[in-house]
Image (cartoon, rainbow, N blue to C red):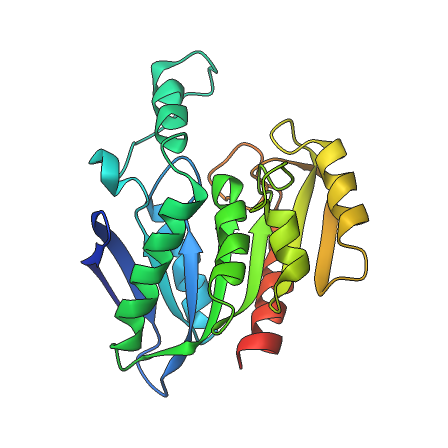
Length: 243
């Protein structure tokens, strides 16, 4: 495996991006892996490595670069702790068009990197970035062929760029993984996804007996069985559409 961290120029500056891919038999389809609200950390780099070990060129960009933040460190479980307020403040600086411009920068870089096949792209986002991953498929339909949202938030809105509308209209195959218990992504939202995306090109799946964050090994909500199931679903999606 080959991995490195480098600054990739964007419309608004430069995003420090972790890139990892196999060391032979490329070029490899690209996966743009969008971070969750607690920011870049080794847990996410390990997940990027797992994607790469299945034969992908994986890009994990820092989305908080506009705020001059790379890693925010451990988070308290106390909802009133200042570390959690800082995380939410950072999360709320991001909007869909901003992240789509960052995805453009990632793909522009990948087009000029020999190990990457930027004509075959998958996007995946967790928590706050589920919506960004889905909207990237609508933004770059010529190359984004598969997209996955894992316990994504704000997936159904009144906006014309609501992720559920993008998923319905995009030629990319989508996958929405939802927790059974999730106050950030309510049952009402999940039910609306299922209703509105019936017959569309993808799947909405709710994981029984899970909480928001179930795929992250370092989280209290980690559920190994569900986490492994999500790996199987997402890797199968990418194998179908990116190979």
